[in-house]
Image 1 (tube, rainbow, N blue to C red):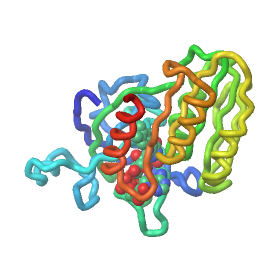
Image 2 (image 1 turned 60 degrees about the horizontal axis):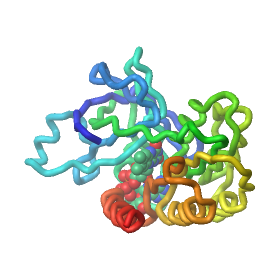
Image 3 (image 1 turned 135 degrees about the horizontal axis):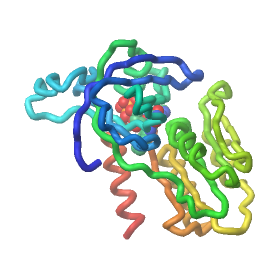
Image 4 (image 1 turned 90 degrees about the vertical axis):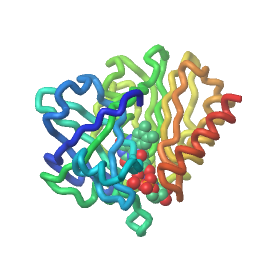
Length: 260
Ligand SMILES: Cc1cc2nc3c(=O)[nH]c(=O)nc-3n(C[C@H](O)[C@H](O)[C@H](O)COP(=O)(O)OP(=O)(O)OC[C@H]3O[C@@H](n4cnc5c(N)ncnc54)[C@H](O)[C@@H]3O)c2cc1C
């Protein structure tokens, strides 16, 4: 993310979209001038070190030069006319191992405020493929939804999505030729990805999910299926058992090793 312009936004609505997904709509005059076509790009939500949301820019002064805690989320939709941004949060950590972002999404109410930075880059599937392979868990579902919405109407391929529960299925807008496969749980997700028939022709692949799953799928796509670099986007969005800060470090080390 090049420049960190901070914006204070207000929760205009919050609904439980599916069992484990909370949809929060954020709005505010500070979104005037926000890039119109930013859907599927990411933002950073800002929290104090104790996990309390940074409610206004002045609150940051309380950090006395220290850094806020940042959490990365996809812009699921942006309405430039109404200055509204939709963000879908996975509600993880019901076992007590939650994080500031998931906790905030679960508890926020209309009228609450929070500061964001962004938007960051948009990483859509390369449109030059003859067919498309998309895969991800629920953290990537907002980005996969955006990807499917912008594919040409005659696109063909498959999107494999790992859910936490069957009741987390959503209505997606996708080209008729893209088969959407919903699977519940990590093992079934990885089996579905591995066993997916692989027709000939140039594929464009896009995948985002948990770190360990990402590594397994990267091996499959990069090495076994030999998807060329320019038509492969693969990223980990989180790592089991560690916070986003720690994940960022491990992700950087992993990427450096991969590029070496
Ligand atoms: C580019 C990008 C876009 C993203 N977009 C979205 C999005 O639109 N929606 C979304 O929900 N997430 C998204 N994520 C993932 C999200 O940033 C992480 O899940 C983040 O760690 C959540 O922050 P937290 O404060 O809730 O938990 P943290 O404080 O980071 O972690 C606390 C604990 O929760 C665990 N944890 C974190 N995330 C999950 C999870 N999803 N399931 C189970 N355990 C988890 C951690 O392993 C850790 O043990 C995105 C990530 C990236 C890099």
